[in-house]
Amino acid sequence: GQSLEQPSEVTAVEGAIVQINCTYQTSGFYGLSWYQQHDGGAPTFLSYNGLDGLEETGRFSSFLSRSDSYGYLLLQELQMKDSASYFCAVMDSNYQLIWGAGTKLIIKP
Amino acid sequence: GAVVSQHPSWVICKSGTSVKIECRSLDFQATTMFWYRQFPKQSLMLMATSNEGSKATYEQGVEKDKFLINHASLTLSTLTVTSAHPEDSSFYICSASKGVGGYEQYFGPGTRLTVT
Image (tube, rainbow over all chains, first blue to last red):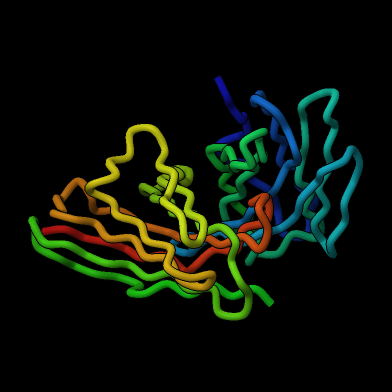
């Protein structure tokens, strides 16, 4: 079967750094995407890793290790507005996104 | 940019009636459009994938005759929930991809459907 594992909830303090991990097991792999979703809103695309390594976009970075079937999203200088759910998603061999269950990020002042 | 609009943003309908939800890519041509539903505090569940001019590909367990999808142009896809029932109440979200691979999808704001 196909599955993605990510923590259901992570808590961090404003201004800190937090890492959200994602491990996957899918039929075929083209890349790992990350999406952010605020309560009541639609997901917004954050990043995509097709190759191993780190991709940086401002305060957010995403990492992929294909040999370990593992990736993570790193959020730095956390702000209250970063409180949201974060989903990892894998593009499988059928060019479909397989979604993780999402990680709720709670940020405390 | 890559803006996707969805209409209506919310709708309440009575059991047995049909509801149409529109999804439009406003500033790009969408090779592929996707329809999802999401229950509270749960992940997105892909319902179907549609390419312009061809029949939608439905995920296992999704009733084709109940959830009619039409992808009439490169900028418009519609989802019609036919003979709606209370259990169809959910958050329906469309997304669009510029290329064949949908690793970067642009989402509409979603439609909250309540069936009474």
